[in-house]
Length: 223
Image 1: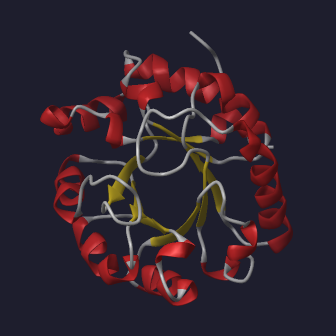
Image 2: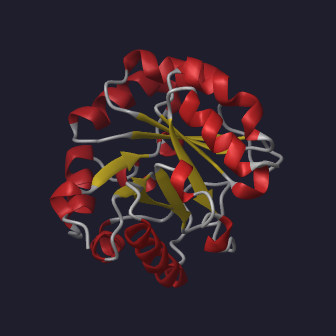
């Protein structure tokens, strides 16, 4: 179980108003965001196109909290240096998207970033059991990646608990992150399952004031 006071909230900028992105970054930081989550999609690995290193760099110029960058792109290892140069602090990739997962994770760490692996709803946790030593974050996708505003897939709870057990038994210092459909209605159960980082998009940016929205997610309270 994770203490609610220790859980990190990472608002997903995919749900922010991009016409005033700098203001949105400042607003969620002042409201209590611990990280900022940025979804990079290429229209190939997932059926959507979003942002690239230039937008990450722009966010980095005005952000004060760590940038949690999620690469939903094919062959992500080609862009590790680009996103490090743009200011990413945590870089998460998908096992299905790269040929050599171990090598990519080592390269991410060697570049100075925290290394993460994101698991789609249908991806077996066996995909990561042999690379735990090279990871800092495991991100469980509780929606199918590609679009914001989707409903949380509740059948992911056994998977989340199994990964929490895997982390604890490994002895490695790995954060467990959940992304997709997170909000006040399920945040308490996620925290009880051992989740350390909650990514929330529409539950923050679609529910102003942001300070109340973030507090409700952190405390598991439904407004």
